[in-house]
Amino acid sequence: MSERDVEPYRDDESLPENPGEVPCGARLLQRFPRPSWISRIAAYRAAIFVMTYVVYVVYHLSRRPLGVVKTAWAPTNCSKYEGLIRRPNSSGFNALERHDDNWCAWEPFDQNSKQLFSWLDFAFRLSYALGMLVAGQFAERVNLRMFLSFGMVMAGLFIILNGMSYFWNIHVYSYFLLAQLLAGTFQGTGWPAVVPLVGNWFGRRRIGIIFGIWNSHTSVGNILGAIISAVWVDGEWGYSFIVPGLITVAGGIFVYLFLIVRPEDVGLPHPDHKLDQAESAAALLKTSPKNAATLAVIVPDQPSRDESQRPSTAGMISITSEGTETLPEKKPISILRALQIPGVWEFSLCLFFSKAVYYTFFFWLPVYIKETTDVVNHIAADLSAVFDAGGTYTELKRTLWAGCAVIENSST
Image (cartoon, rainbow, N blue to C red; front, side):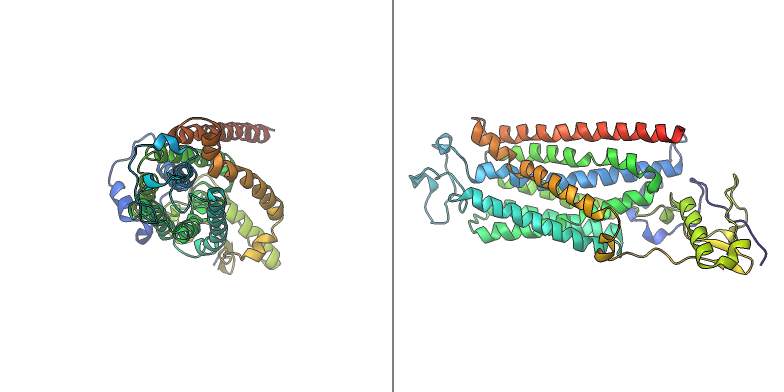
């Protein structure tokens, strides 16, 4: 075989598709005409951006009810509930017959409520952290669409179980603790799945600005979760869990029907294919110096006309006079190997302390507002959303600064 130039794909070039990886809902949408003013790759990227954004909005929306409903489980002032008919408590008599100050609280939170709430918070955060570690190992080895869909459905179901305690008249603390443990575990499936999805479609060069805009989903989800949960918190608070849980389950079904994991599945090149070719060439030269004279990685303006010379995957290709050599595909790394990457420990510690402060507000701000003011439960929940509104503004401002820095650096 004579030496040949390997020509990378253009961003909107059509390549062989993988129909087996395209879900039925996406295949249905492909039948509709695409506007002429938007390219095929841009249309897919816009859809993936919106879909993954909404997915993580839903994840955060479903975490919010616990912080909101605490004010209903252990009200600070039972006088405003005088005359209301309450459900029987675990002792078997109507709550109106009780004469203590916490008669309107939901057992078992009528005694030592703050300690019990703290353990619920701890159970959720611990299971969420451990679940994310385990989920990260699975996410790199399984189909991301199936993984994300399953995780959302299971997370939604366990959130619904929290709300069903109102209608099933459950007053056993272990029930609430187990529901939080399981909900936190499956909440950990979100981040390890959606981050690779965004990376698959936008690549390393665009990831900074894209993630800056995309990461505002955290605050948007918290705001929506607080507002939705607040609708029922002064009455049938079970719906404050059930409705967000149903939304999460619906999100999982939506992901299963419409999410496309990789651009290669619809005949589009990976956004990093040019970077991968350059890295492959460098690695090949390093491992096989004899190929230096025959290696050629050229970036012309026109695509290759010889279909046989197109690699079947985006990147990892090199051509020599003896034939075609392809570097091994990138494999998932272990947790120990990830911890050896420079900067991981420092970033993890920074995130640890920032998240500690963030989740304190997340789980306790409605309670604090309720205890320090005379507002009712749903107003306390709505006011707590202002904290997250500030987070959305900060995320967008930070993204604008980052984008200006990128433009400035690229022009110098």
